[in-house]
Structures are given as C-alpha cells and as structure tokens.
Length: 394
Ligand code: HAM
Image (cartoon, rainbow, N blue to C red; front, side):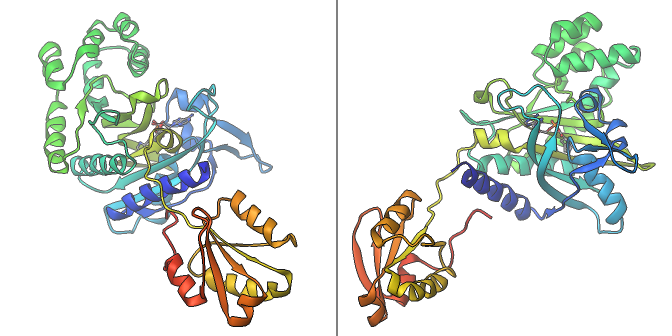
C-alpha cells in the first residue's frame, strides 16, 4: 500500500510538471565531490557521503540534484532552446541525524528553469509548486494545507554588508534555524526579522534596500497564478548558492521536519562557468506523509482453474492482461485454495475456468467483494472489467 501511494504521488507530480511543459532529466547517483564542495554550504558539505574510487578520484553520493542538473545542462544541453524547463525525481543522500521525516536516503522531486527572465521563472515555478500542492491535497493557504513563504537572500546580504564574513555566516545560520535571539547577538536588527511580515515593513526600520523592487516585481508576476504566498524575510535557506528570491513550503501538521519544499534563484559555478537559474525541490517522502491522495480504484483479477483446463486458463489470462492486471496459480493449488490466495492478495475479481466453461468457450466472472458471479463469454468479461487499462499512477 505504501508503494502504491508513492506511485500515485509520483504520477501526480510528473503529470503536474508535464502539464507545464517540463521535461524529465536523470543524472548519476554519484558525482565528483568538488561539484558540491564549492557552493553548497557548510551543512551540505558536512553531510556528504564521500569516497575515493579505485582510480583515486574523490566522489560522493549526491546530496541534491540542482548542481548535477546544471552540470549536465552545461555539458550536454548547452545548445538546446532556452528556456530549459527540466524536472527530476530521484534519491539523494545526506549524512544527518535520522529523525522522523529526516532520512539519510530520501527522494527529491524538483524542477529547474534555465535561461529565462528571473522574475517570470520564479513566478512560474511558484505557480507550479502551488498546482502540485493542490493536486497532492495540501493546497497553499488553506486550513490543514501548506504555507509558501518567500524570502530574499540578496535583501539580507545587503543588510549585512558592513559585517565581517564570519559574523554574516553566523547570522544566516541562526536565521535559517529561526534562532532570532542568537542572530540578534551577532547583529541587533536580526530581532526585527522575527515579527516582520513583509519586506516593506523591514525597509521601514532598516532603511532602503535595492532588492525590494525585485520582490515587488515578483509579486506582480505571481499575481495571475493565484497562489497564496506569504512574505517571510527570515527565510534564508541552508544552501550557499542562492542569490535572489528564495522560498520554503511548510505543512505545519507534520511537526518537526515540516519543510516539504525549498527553492529559489541561485548562481552556480560549474567547471568554470557561471549559471544563474531558478528551481525548487520537494522532499518527496515528506510530501507523501502530508499528501491527501484520492484512493484510486485498482483492479486485480485472479484467473483460477482446475488442473485439466490450466492451459486454457493461461490463454485467458494472456488476453485479459491487455486490459487488467492478472494473477494465475503457479503452486498447483486446488481451485478453492486459489480463490483463497486471490482473496489474500486483495483481488477484486476472479475469472473461474472449469471443464464446463472451457468446453463452451465461456468463463465465470466472480466479484470478490459482493461474492456474486455470472457466466459469460470472454469478450463480455473483458468489457465488464473495463478497458483500456486503468491509469496506474503514471
Ligand atoms: P533543500 O531544502 O536542501 O534544497 O532540499 C529540498 C527538500 O528536500 C527539503 O525541503 C526537504 O523537504 C527535503 N529534504 C532535505 N533533506 C532531507 C532529509 N534528510 N530527509 C528527508 N527529506 C529531506 C535543495 O536540495 C535544493 N537543491 C532545492 C532547489 C532546487 N533549489 C533550487 N533548485
């Protein structure tokens, strides 16, 4: 049942991305260590699963998919028409203390937009994230749903301009963990970030900031998408590569690890080239925990038969498989035990074949729930079970 839910959510997210014209990409599970040590930030670097291969190369399991995607784009897709709209789904690895909803192996579903107007790209991916949250049953801004919070690392960096690098890093780190008092010890005005509900508010106390224009432009670009987004200037994100607007999505009822998605605009230097783009990644496992997915009606048919007509039963199973998933007996069980197994596996229907049915070219279709049954020809049986094959989530 757990795997079935994963597949359903996977389908929801893939269909969401594809509906907006995003194309799937895949990158290797391991990468050169350097790809992540340059711009990812202390927390990510500390959590790397790194190793040396037999050729002496320093490698690691990927902790995220943004840097690998950009590396791939620069290597293989540099001539593709811009903007590139890409999505990915795959496992990531971080050596962190495991807790509820924090794992050393977890899955991300993310998107990256490369080569677009930054404000429009940010607005689009926020719109897309909103659509995905809605489809997953945790709509933004609704009771029990998600909250999308918008920050801007450029805004904060500007505020901290006068501070030495080390103290700046400490302020960032404390704000990321919502430790406002600690941040305030390094830089007094940080205390104001706790209550700030908008950048305009903060500007009043901290003085003019060159980035408020970008935030206003983003809010304007975002308006047509109709996705509720709150401003939270204390959102700074744990990764060092962000440069512009950033955002996080929280589902409060998840408790401790409530962040189901994070993203924003970043600048990455890969193999000597610098790329500014924007994207986000859902923590797939966390989103799954929060998701309210519609139950999908799933059919499972067991073709059961007596030994003398087993060959005929296998042919019937072959015909049915074009339309529905089918189980057959491979344990030489008696008919009754085959029905018992079908029941145990949660089969919704059994197609029963005995000598009498086989001789007349007919089958008995049995509803495993209601226990009713009826004899009919195979064509009718296929029609009743419903074709074409039901959507299995993809
Ligand atoms: P991130 O915030 O580090 O951002 O990770 C994205 C999401 O992955 C988080 O919001 C969280 O839901 C999930 N996540 C992170 N660590 C774990 C863990 N140990 N266990 C379970 N879930 C976890 C990034 O990785 C950026 N690459 C996102 C991005 C894409 N920014 C721009 N484009």
